[in-house]
Amino acid sequence: MAGRGLIKGLAAGAGLLAAALGLRAVAQRMARAAAYLPEGIDEKIWLPLNGLEQWVTFRGRDLEKPVLLVLHGGPGTSMTQLAHQAFHDWDRDFIVVNWDQRGAGRTFGRHGAKRTGPLSIATMTADGLALAEDLKARFGRPIVLLGISWGSLLGVEMIRRRPDLFAAYVGAGQVVDMARGEDISYAETLMRLRAKGDERGARRLEAVPPPPYPDLKSLARQRKALISTMPKAEREVFSKLPLTLVMAPDARLADLVDFMRGARFSIGQLWDELMGWKLADRGVAFDVPMIILQGDLDLQTPTALVTEIAPRLKAPACDLVVFEGAGHLALITHAEAFRHELVERTRPLTEPPPKRRRRRSA
Image 1 (cartoon, helix red, strand yellow):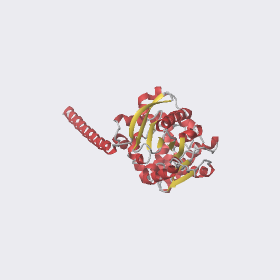
Image 2 (cartoon, rainbow, N blue to C red):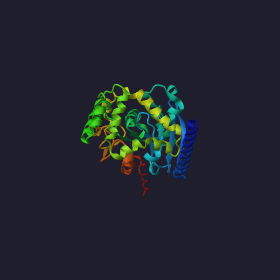
Image 3 (cartoon, helix red, strand yellow):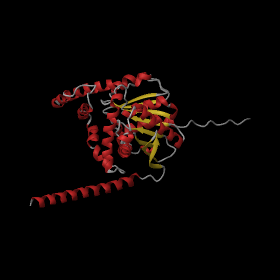
Image 4 (cartoon, rainbow, N blue to C red):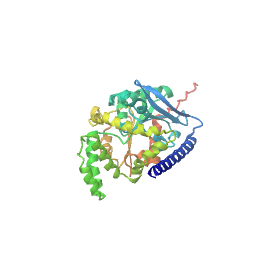
């Protein structure tokens, strides 16, 4: 009898799984149909960058629009499968380029830890510049660079090295000083937990040694506590992340595994080097216009450090926009306001200068 019950249970489970996969396939087909572009560009390719093939996607409705290269956060947290949510309708204003960096997403899935090799800020910067050179040659104009969280650190390194490749730099969740940022994040998270009466959460966080964290497990515990203090909209983004990844229009079930494995690998490889990084270490003068779009409640890359350094930055143009009520994921939770600022502040930097009329000789 027990064997027969087990068989029935397995059969029922298999039936539910098959139904769920069937519904997922239908939802993905509908999403792909809705995302179809009758003109412009919608390509997904492997590009050899700095000796390693890496996954890159291009999407835009008008080939004359500015090229926007997105540097995802993490390190290691690819945004390619989140693009349908995070960059909804951005293809009206830009040719949006998403890149699964070395050690992230499909790039990590293809190569694994062994063929990916050791990661460093210098290696990742070289990869990014190889991609930017390809994009400039492909589309014939400088690039708007959008760095998100860890991507903002990478973006700063890229514009330092090759300002000629870029029309503008945009930082979202801008990294300023990793060590100070972690100190602030830990202390402010503890204050937020106590302010909302979560003494149990506060005690759990106090059981974690303060920065510098002895291991990545301690970092993960602090981030879990931090997420619990974020605005509701941001907590929902994190809670729905696995479902969002597997339901993306072009997602494979393997993408969720690659996302998680890549994130663990990359942060393990880079964390110690990141903790020594400061934006101002090699000066605060840049040859590329700089725009920083920041949530006022961001504690992952603390806004206090951003507002402190912003007046010191020297660039052809320098803007700081702070979104009230937003945390680290302002580009998703405050999507329309974020896109509006991104478009309006980069447009003057990417439009070709007006042609001068030649005067007729008398």
